[in-house]
Length: 222
Image (cartoon, rainbow, N blue to C red; front, side, top):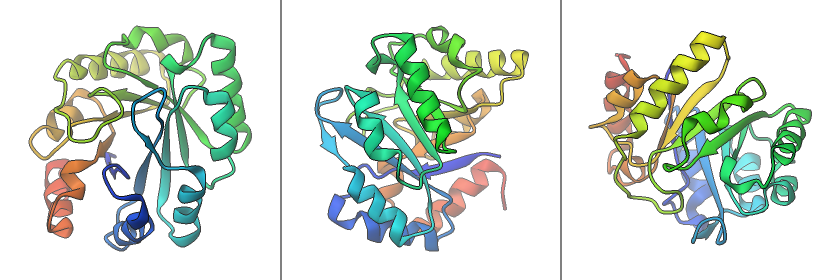
């Protein structure tokens, strides 16, 4: 099953709880929460207490994406939130031991753990982590700014990851984030992705109910 996850970015933070409630009422399953520290990426957004407010005031599932410089330190702030997924960037870690520690911390709290890679990071870099994690998030734009265009080469990464996961029977979700819209989402699904993050394309849609119908048609749901 393919899941489309609207993103918190570019929703203004003071309207985020209201946005989450609206998404829930529309039947959206997941909210993708973009957390940025102004160091790993240029922008700063989404402190832990704001995501906690979303959790306390809605029933929507939370998919937290930490784009932060010190994941092990920042993780403690977000791990107490009732999230379904927490995803960390491979590039933010200095050594494999720290990555394993972070994954264990997430799993200890019965949360699913993901690893994300930037466009310039080869998917082969995380092959050894696949038995340990539940999700791989492939960034199809440079992380940090909403509204960028999808990088076509990301499709090759998705296909490679799908093939390796199938060959080794790894039970992982393949999530893709960046520049996804109604025009390219079918190619992303066909490549093997089963979680698609949609930021600007979804948030800027004037009629979100109509947008969801269009998404479902592309997914093959009438």
